[in-house]
Image (cartoon, rainbow, N blue to C red; front, side, top):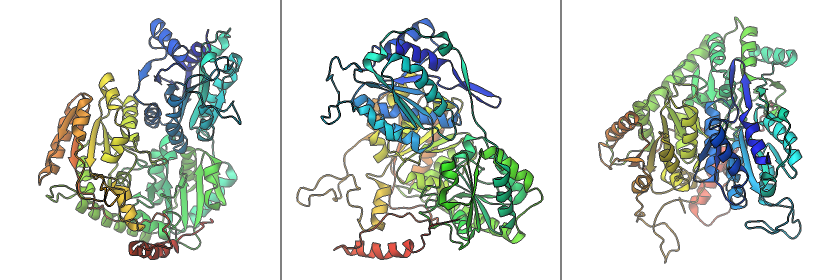
Length: 627
């Protein structure tokens, strides 16, 4: 066999086992072919398709970055038990996958990357698209994957494939180590023939590790919870990936401990659960942030404590606050200097805590405060969702309309701009897998490709992608993939003629929305700060790809028309793009969170000087959070 043929057949026979669930680790390969891989991976996939079509299905994509985004979207819906492989050609094809690699690793999501490389023999040196560095001619584009991957290796000799492939699978299926896994494949080695032992091609099972908590750390955690008067749980993505939402619910119902979620932890509890406070941190709710500010114990479950989750280390204000960090990865369990790390699986640890804390419950006064704060925030959300009759509604009102027109098992998909923050505060999650916001890397352009991955992973659910015009323009070509494969997604383009999120942020840091509007260039002022918007027709752009398009015109009935459009899209079996305009200056209710973005201390502009004075006030609340 060739190296590529052996790799394809090997990947086809790998299985992930998680308790009673057994599924293929790599159910297919996304690929864009060029001279670097057409005779290697391309030929191997063609041969597999001819001889055994179900062995390793091949799927087209329109952008290499988008292939990885699809893999990540699919992997989350399968709770990291499965992902796709992404094959790219040498040079720019490989380089296009770098952003996807960083996104997968940042989100702790498995993705197998197979970028092609230049000749290992260097017989045709330099080949087309080869990178040449005089100080080190062995360095190639694929070396850029090293700092972005949880595993990287290059198959320079055919015999190396065995150890490399096995090591790659170990990292892909390890909950503590997973992320982007990169196997660089020189174009000559891909097509090189060698004798392959049958043992390499036999079916192999990879059992997901669910480590139990050690007795000592568990006992210390239990003692800390019993001693706490105002405990708060921060539920991260690890709750979802370990399938711990049911045991989390049982624990908090028994103890009364409230729960705030990170972006990745959305879905850990349904929105109307009495102990659920909503999102926590910079884009969190007032309920979550006020209780977090007074918490004397923070129980982090499967969270990596990003700066948004901690509001740049300002959300936890109790002078003696301590942290019990439950995480399968020691790297995250020890964050904030915690002296109470529990390096174990989220589900297993929560079950153990529930057993050890039997009979323990927070004080009635604390329960009453949880109810009061939740009531107040729910009222704020209801007010934000109420139709205003404006020609161009604010984003919160649009989210309310989408919420009202969606079903409980629908999946909302988002990644970048102002939408993630508003969704984190406002979206009322009703299903553990119904909230999909990629926010570790917050990659503009993730939304449509990631939404396709979600649909592949959950073909029985409607997938609703919400995307601003700025992010849509970054990577919209995967709509062609949706048409080619008949993959149904509903894409809602919210056009606000610029970058709404950074526009708002720039006001708070003294940049006054500079460079954030889509306007015609003013030759005299040398800027884009005029009033004339660009004559860009995004609805026509989407229509050109072959999807159905519904345009919601500005007007007092735009919200009702949006709801009607969503109902039409849900009833269809085709992909639908819904286009409407919003007012970027109408904001969602404030959740009392903060995000540290440094402001220039010296400036000629008064708006900057004023912003710096405000910045110092918020900066003073920042703490090292040694727990």
